[in-house]
Length: 112
Image (tube, rainbow, N blue to C red; front, side, top):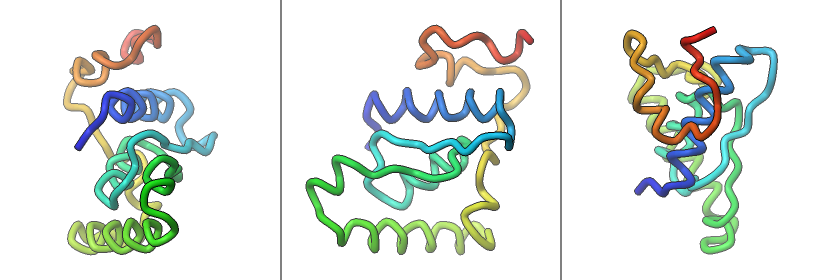
């Protein structure tokens, strides 16, 4: 289930990856409690993900569960490893509207 913070964070990760390319490590944080959440952040451009609140609720066993789920997703999608996924999200054409809803005051990346 997506939370407002996760949606904002995913959009921000995507926009930062667009601006900095591979020159910077980006850590995705906010609403990560499953392998699917981690996968979404990787697709958006995160080099790593941070788990906070879910760890407080579930404890250290969360890390094994998320890693197992993420590995399963990567295998089903035929990726060799998580780094192959980073930044693979592509917005079709110039339609940034899905990201703009949560972008706040970030500039339009298509207007460079």
